[in-house]
Length: 381
Ligand SMILES: *Cc1c(COP(=O)(O)O)cnc(C)c1O
Image 1 (cartoon, rainbow, N blue to C red):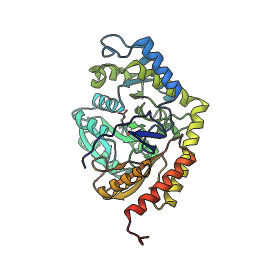
Image 2 (spheres, rainbow, N blue to C red):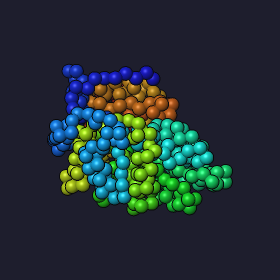
Image 3 (spheres, rainbow, N blue to C red):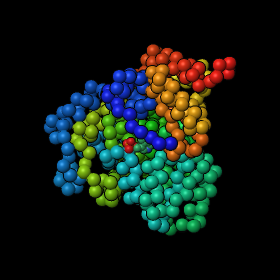
Image 4 (tube, rainbow, N blue to C red):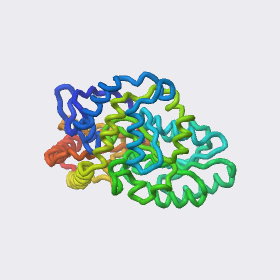
């Protein structure tokens, strides 16, 4: 299970260079191909020139740099919430927000497959932690009832992802919202893999399902479809005021570099425009082609509605051997294994980018067939 780092010597994109080897990249979360987009690179350069390379201090100590305010205004407008607050990473945003809103005497009810940062946040908060079976509304209702019986005075926070990062499936957010409203609980939704991809204005799954105004805490990263780096919480002005005063990763950490904030704002600007819509449509076309390629190559994927397309393998060693064979054949597809997913549920995780071409998919098809031949004895169907 030991991991090691491989040095990447090219910018993010549809191809990745490791030393002398170029690989077609099916591993990135840069879904819309914005991470190396000239508009983001130029925004970062301009911000570094105008505001410096480093932020100098935390935002409450030394003054809060203009690019961060501009980004937060753009984020609140994009997500259509009263306000937004940015953090250095999505991970920090989750820790900061959950710990700020619940504590001892409160209850956090978490989806079984929620991201590690949400689990850590819930533990760190000191609230009672209950886990409901993945996307299981009956189990969620049981846990909500338990919380109402046992902790009638406490606040109850339900926490889930909207698009699950290792399975590519969606949370039944409409039903979850109805349930949490019935029990007077709050809802925290991590839109890390939905921002930019779902909803009429590409705000995320909360928008796609028509739930704007009914989710108390919306979290996102700025490092995936937005193409930059950072994390954000979007919600009411009162919530953001609370976080400015209580979120420890915000209070006790140097502000992100101005270049990151400016790049994220440029990424959001593209998401808002026709180019954002074109890139999204192209991404969904690539997702469909990828599914077909995988099925035709004998590696049928799980049912997904996301640019995350897992192919379940099972044993860790088998998934790693497949990923190695694919790399030898020129494509980068990561093997995901414990502790990122449960033991013996290892998988190949193919991620789509709007920039993938027909040739890239043909290369994947050829690599899958080469990997199959290498790993299966002759004569095996
Ligand atoms: C990537 C990810 C995060 C963390 O965001 P960063 O900005 O990378 O720290 C949080 N939640 C989910 C579901 C993620 O996939």
